[in-house]
Length: 151
Image 1 (cartoon, rainbow, N blue to C red):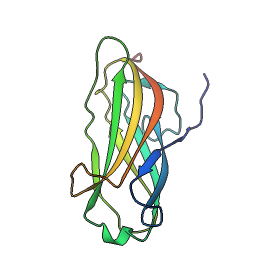
Image 2: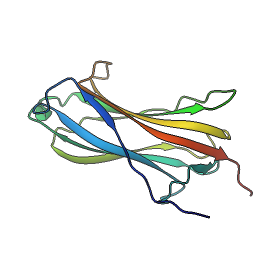
Image 3: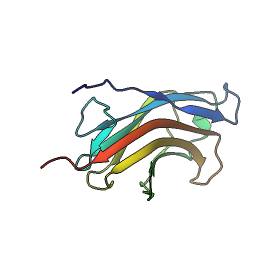
Image 4: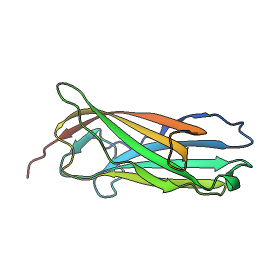
């Protein structure tokens, strides 16, 4: 079978502040299983899926917005008769430094039923856990086929 390399997908950012104040860019990708650098779009239900966010942030406002939180969410839209959801979001404090960062959202093994799903990743920077945001982004990771493998 064919093993394909990880294909990062750019996060589509929109910021409500000028780039000199806050500038964020990045990408996201996913892998199946424990640390495997593959993206087959076919996932065995007994393996975890790791969605990795990579981002760079800069701007003179960064040191002053330390009370913000970064929300990382993954949505699976099941094709066909049923929907699947929700995957618990990962929330971490905003880092008040310029630089490159990364974090993972893990979908545990045995939590997604067999089926074909559209995978979407979202990033939101929020003030004090609210809904107002100076920066949001999303990435369409395409389709994944969760299936039960032979024992």
